[in-house]
Image 1 (cartoon, rainbow, N blue to C red):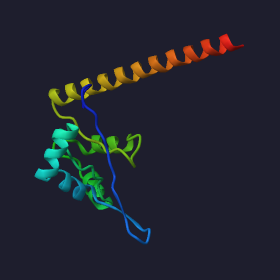
Image 2 (image 1 turned 90 degrees about the vertical axis):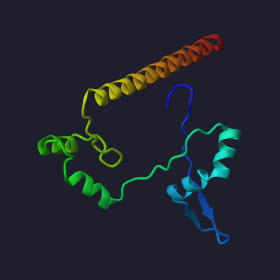
Image 3 (image 1 turned 135 degrees about the vertical axis):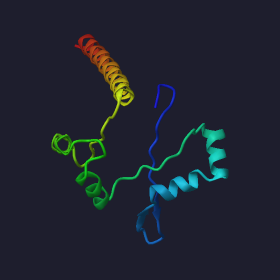
Length: 138
């Protein structure tokens, strides 16, 4: 995602007449939204450029992924990556192989850092404005 695009995550709940709800699987929703008729409407009316389904690993898939280190990754390093994972519920270790992958990760981290810095600057300005208003009302 760059400065000219936005990512939107949607969930669809199907509510029956009895009031029971069922969440529509992301793959089913993506399948409908990428059908030619709907995709054209989204593209022309809402400027949607891409629809993907965001799905999580099942516990068995996660175990299968984590139990065996990827090809070319030392079992010791893989175990260290799993142990040092700051949030094993939400994050999984992903090896970066080669200069291009590391360079891309660095670029993305720099973009994220700049976005955080800009937000902190904006919040600081808002705090100053609030203080100025309070000082003028006292």
